[in-house]
Length: 149
Image (cartoon, rainbow, N blue to C red; front, side):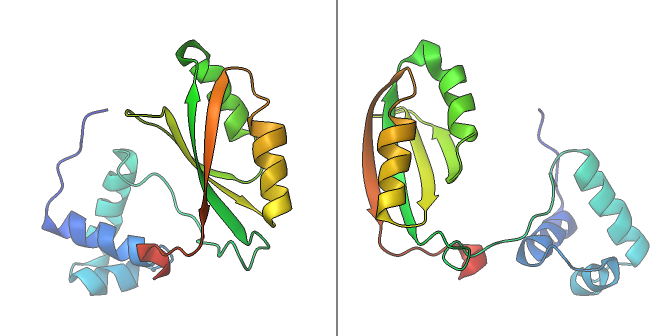
């Protein structure tokens, strides 16, 4: 997909919506100093062009009962990647999957209730997927992200 050219107003709109996706068009227009009609038109264009792909709630994993987080790195049989990816996406607790270049093939963020649940997810579910050659688990002690800062 070709990238969409963005001007300064588009960038301000995106930044405002990334901070608070629940802004009304009136609030958005006031924040970026444009008319409501212009805000509507720009948000519609950004959505239609695929720059804005959706809106979601940011949920605190600990408050949700997922107090243990880990990054998993893994090496996989390359011809099996599509089926491995589909299986990984279907697992509860898998938050992010990235195919990467370097010393391992995949990096994943997983969340679990506790260490026993993490052990079950990694050893029983993930390592049993055909084509996964090895995994390494990196336990997360503390995390922050810009949207949860």
